[in-house]
Image (cartoon, rainbow, N blue to C red; front, side, top):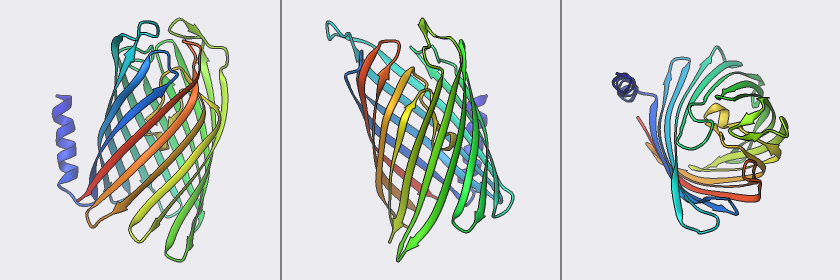
Length: 281
């Protein structure tokens, strides 16, 4: 019944204007991880605008190959599915309210069946300058995570180039003591970030970075969550693409370095290369 309702909702959105669907596919590579080797990631989603409302539905599936650290023989694959719903309501040119929900299904991690709830507000002070404040609550079996995000953004134009720079601060607090058999040593994290995106004659690009340790982070305006006990330290992101009449094609690359806490594995690199195709109705 849930699948039928979901298909009905998506079909209604697609058949109306002001909507788009997108497919994203990518490959993952790990260095120095205890068991993770490589994998693939795929997602499908839809964006829908109706009057003052914006709705995003997304489904993603990750498959990661693992091997025994001693024998190097393949062991059980990691499979992760995530369902995400984002909703925004624009009251006027200045004020927008946001809410989001994520459900996690993971065949190995203690955060299986985790649920993430979020609310936020975005306010434009004047043309090009604004701020956002978001609060997220991650509900897991043996612990919870509270996250507070503050961002300030400024748009500007140089000739035919339209750009926006965003400064980000994240405060993360762990409420609980255990992730499986692992006992948390640190429960409070603070990280900052910067993003710069722009458009030029139909081309789009973005770069970004996070500085400072973080864990169980909710990212990308409530549409992504990192639910494994991986203490990330450095993150760099890059994307470039082209807009066509009714479609977009964008390639992205991200690099993260951190520590697997339960395995006590340092200097773990995670690299993801992906391609996104979007079609507008």
